[in-house]
Image (cartoon, rainbow, N blue to C red; front, side, top):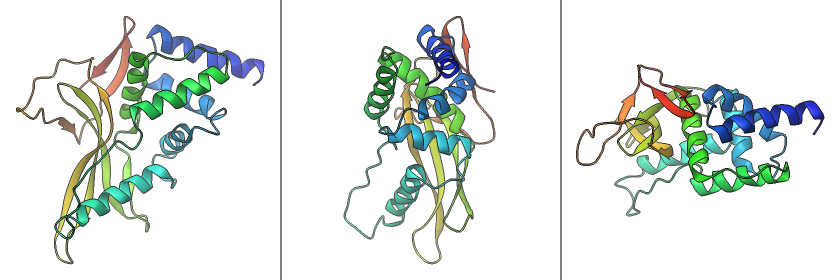
Length: 212
């Protein structure tokens, strides 16, 4: 790492630790981290997915395709439908803190990791999902409930030759400690922003979710 790169890394790391960063800072921080993430696949995958807006193949697209297949197999198998995040909070925390340690920087606390994931969710919203033939089959959307901030996928599924429908499922989640959201129902069904763009910014050292 040369002196200029170290200076840039220290700048964005300082904003992360001080709570003065927002989604735009995370967008610039990801490529810096990728230079030192050969053993941390999630940073490589997320950075590529963000910078190409979902055009490049990789683990995230594979995850979306595999989850789509799970919905299409409903009723034809006895297997229970279980959907986990594309990358777990534990995986994100461990990978990021390993890179920071390699760069002689102190690891981030869970609260700051949650802030970073929330920014990632916002950055990834509105990306189009395409199939192997580059046909649009869905989108990624920002969603929020009383307890969670969620990157939600809505994707076309075919359950037989003639019936098509859309499946909606979470891709990435963070705890909602930013906005006081009224529960829609007893299940805390999230609000899904299909036609609006949500922004995650910083105000007085704390993340703030701007909902249009």
